[in-house]
Length: 274
Ligand code: ZN
Ligand code: FE
Ligand code: FE
Image (cartoon, rainbow, N blue to C red; front, top):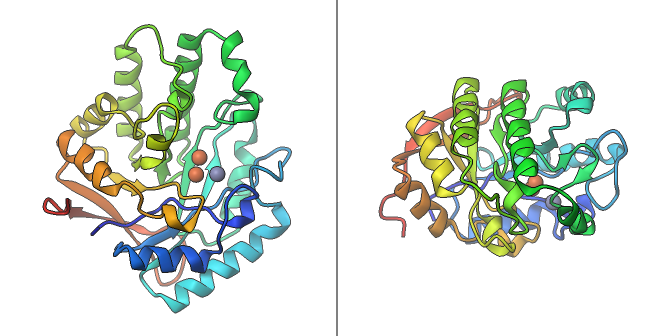
């Protein structure tokens, strides 16, 4: 598959398996064009050992991936998946800027203190108004886009993960979100992990992806692999979705030799990649 995978995790986060080198080997075996490791940044303010590596391990993570970057120049990228939570944004920014990440994926996994994609807190959906959950979630994604902290927005409709769907189509909210993302100039990933969750759908859904395409929002691809075998998983379906939404190009990240945020380039989608 002639595509890069920019969203993969490692055993450091406490809920994935495999070392970065195992993910690189898997990516090469699958014929992917590049591999970005983007493990979870410690979730502030109180890191949880099941959600992310301890802050003390961050430097080790960076060193390990940097060694792979040296070994596989131009192929491996050093990324990180950071949580967007309004009250921690300054601390996240400090942490992210302390290391030479090629890119930062910004994700919303929380509404307030509720981990909305965490199976441990699934029951919370039963006591909430689902429309409100969606509206609040989409608003936070817009805030994350506008924060300027992130290169890529991760799984932008993660709120559907467990299959709780709003009672109406949220046209106005999705229009507004697409406009906010478009103005912010951030990239959106097509994330295939949702196919293996109760929602059984890629993030984002086609109706949102079409809105993003109409506003020329660039896309990248991510498997959100938590095991080396999952690298590049279902990218044939991701490509098909992108083409269906009207995309003909996607964004690749070109790491700077000096480190620091990668440059974005646009490439044609591999039309015959299926
Ligand atoms: Zn994870
Ligand atoms: Fe995530
Ligand atoms: Fe992830």
